[in-house]
Image 1 (cartoon, rainbow over the protein chains, first blue to last red):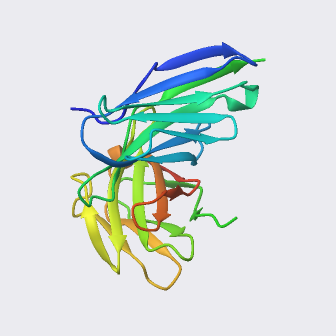
Image 2 (cartoon, rainbow over the protein chains, first blue to last red):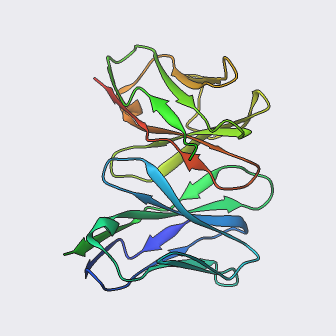
Length: 112
Length: 112
């Protein structure tokens, strides 16, 4: 089974619109982290939400976590062309493991 | 802001050769990691390192791989005898306990 599956796989929107990406996972988690990756570049950490949190904000980012459904969403409001990138969720499994398990990512394109 | 650095940014090597990828984690972090991303695929965990020893490793991290913290700042990944399928982007990351993992910019390894 796959942990951290995002949908949609690709999303294309106009500048100024909101972008919502979803992530599902299968095991109990300690926390869930969202990362951004520009094409062929490094992973930039965006936000971390713990298993006992339901919502978190950071600037134009809003993350929700529903542990009963084992899902999370990332909302980017008022998108900009510079937000064009791939977005990954990564889960830290409960129970002492330190490894992040990444999903396949959502490729977001924001058209000017 | 402190960041994880990696060298080299690109490495081209012949199959069967040894490569060493280098990382300088964030100075007050205690956990160090290597991940890899084959082109177009998910980011995959390789190994975590804590208190001068491997704390967790994946099935990918076989006898061809080794990690070392040779001094107080560097963290290295060695691949003893590279294979074509080792071609990937290799990311180093560091963190405090079960918190945000900060990733370096990556080393793109190409095995010919």
